[in-house]
Image (cartoon, rainbow, N blue to C red; front, side, top):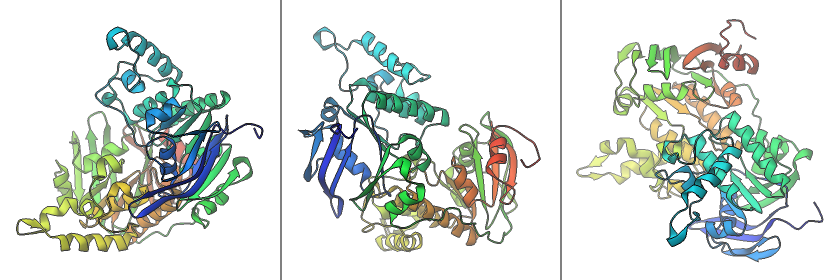
Length: 503
């Protein structure tokens, strides 16, 4: 590999946004047939660097070379024509169009008089979908697909050209374990064809499974590279955040208060049935299960987004009827949703307005919203949650994933809830911010909040929870205390094994 020329090379790239120097003279390269992981905390500059390479942003300074030929990436289509394909973390699909039209968007095959050659379009798209082992057709409307399947359509786009380099930005954030296996097979196939792969992920297990080399950015600067086989997670983490993290430290359990939330025989059609559990004040209850087990659907029912078909919800021992989020908020139930960007934030609005949005009607002075009251709320929770932002005027869309998540949590804490439900609290968040969110959840329990955490990451559930509830096909299979739960018996439970014996 040392005698080869790089598939792509970036030299002294500088990119500045208002108030932020996102990239400060960064150089980076990937060789043909190499999977090169690019790591760093949220806001370190990873995605910005790749967006410069992918033609989304233009660099203020620096140069890009494709196989040592200087190139200017005027647009994503221009970058793709030069052999650089960007698979985005945020989906960039047209929901109203078919899968095939999305795969070949901007380069649809044509017949005479400019007509689209749908026969060729569907045939070519079908071949790619078959290669990806997708269970949907080229004619399927993208808006009808799940998030995971939409991500597979994004990946399919990369296979339409003779790529020299493919950039994967958090590609597994919405994929199931089975779909991850297919993705890694595709990456290995591209690697065998001599394609350079840039792989951005916060998931260390994936980095050590798929990559050959790791490069790290911190505060917009290049901090070094490591051979994956010769390093370990602690060394990579120290390079990323400038310190080591002890993610195995035992948690402190707060004294439990009275039962804040009780659910009796709760059902919601075919999504989940006969669910019973309690959450005390000062307690974190973790929900764990495979995709489709019913965890998120329970949270949405408690928050009034779904209507239960049977059962009761009790708060402080009193039965309540929750038919909408307005009811849930009034009763003191708040939900930090699974997808913060789509469901938890208005990305074009500033930090202050996002944080005060649910209570804006209570912050009026005459016909106007009280700026002073809003700023006071934002300042309070910015300090409490250590939110890093230049000011309240900063657009939320410009914040790192960890700080965006803190804005969503602060928004609901400012409503003084009795019960806080957090769905996938650290999805798409770097290892440093993940530790902060975990500590924040434990601190909330110490303050007397009743907290429900739903997570697809077993280490996360085991770390933050006082009790863990395992779900399988819409029902609770087992409930574990923190002392008895471990990886083995939790895996057994989410596989449908109802044994009362701890493995």
